[in-house]
Image (cartoon, rainbow, N blue to C red; front, top):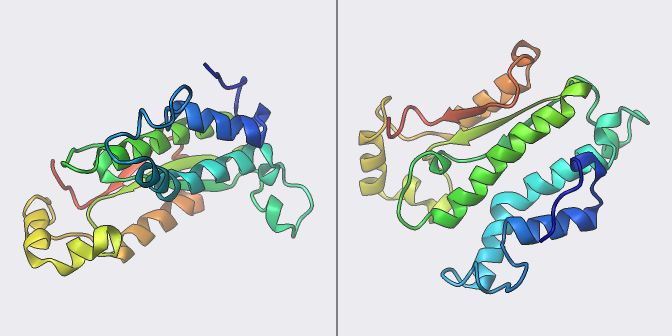
Length: 198
């Protein structure tokens, strides 16, 4: 079994890739075992689209030097002390719907990573939070929430504010967490769902 070193800042990219392969995908002994229900290709694609960007950015920020505040103007080192990181999770990490188990588990992993990043980057005054959108009228899931009136109406009926979300609903929440006014919010999961499944 592979265990992580003391923290993200001490991992190499190879350590990180192996850690994710074993502990997230579960392929330490048999790469096909954990993905049997979805199929290995589908599971790998889901891992890539649901989590890889967050995990890779987390590694780069902590290990790659982005947060060190060196060499101003270098895009690779753009996050200064006192910066903000907002990871994207999903409401599906809180409530359950059939068919979304693997996706929700990966988003749940992002929520845990968010708390660890907040702890490990706290000494640099970098706040790290996760925004967890509910159902949003986008292309996600083939645009079902946006394009299928029956699905849209059902989700709206399960939402306290009486409608499904729009992309601008999420953008405003992210912008708020990135502002100086939210600098004391750290290590939190902020659900932006209009109160779905309360």
